[in-house]
Image (tube, rainbow, N blue to C red):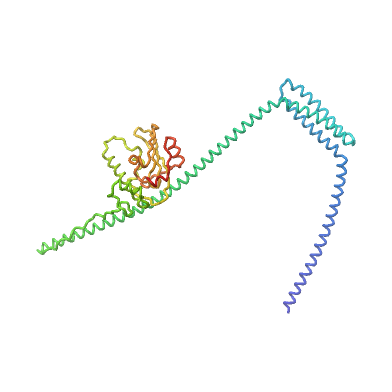
Length: 434
């Protein structure tokens, strides 16, 4: 019951406070409304007085403003007259001076005189405007030719600046695009280099493990041989009969018939059969295996040719210095159906010390176009399908170009140089039939 009484008392206190606050708020609101209406009344009275004053004095004020504007125009006419020739400047200056004196007299009369009819104000100012207009037209006719020539010259200059700015903006966008593409190529090269280093580390670990197993196997075989030798000596000493020796264990590894690592043994087929398979087969893996076998044979042929050539015979240009890494890299054949087009540029130094450039276009793992710009400026352009014996014979992964910093270039750079030296157009779809 006490709790209920406390709640009722609290509610009564709240109600009383609300009534008191509402009463105070109502009084304040009424006071503000009274003040607002008094202010509105003052504003209405001010507007009425202003309207009556403007109605009485507005024509004279308007004429005064027009006269002042004309006086300002005379100053501009003086500046314009200073640009004229000396022969006509004096006459026009006298006209401007007399017109300026008339305008000043009109302004003074508008300030001092009492209220006059509106037509008087308008007529006086209209006469002044007509005089100013006449002077302006005469001066404009005299300087029109010079002004037109100056405007034409300015427009031509602005147009040249606009074209220059547009060309600079275009060059900037092209350079920005080229920098972006080079940055992407550099990132891709770094990723490929990381993948290559990881794969190389895995291969090195596997080779070390295989070498360790081979040493352990040789040590075990040597231990068995020593045990057998000891047993034979003991048997000979005791004049006992030796048991027949077991056949020796072969240390050679198992030959992998699949020379391409994909189950296809292509080492015994002829070049004609290899070419027919490339031209007629629809099996992607078989096509990749045939292409790898073709490049393997071509590489072996070039190696044999290089070993049997006399010393000092001309080689294949920059292929040897460019692809020194190919001797250490393990051959990898891509299984991707989407042939990625990549372009490379490698500088090289000839025997005379001059610098030349070697360009290559790889489709997937195999080269399809090769271009050598000799130090003398003479180009050598080669294409897959007709110059295979003269072209690079290693794959893209074996070449190590993807890991060489700054070697990869953009497509338009290669194509512009290729076309500039007379290279014909190239269709990527032709690779399916190459």
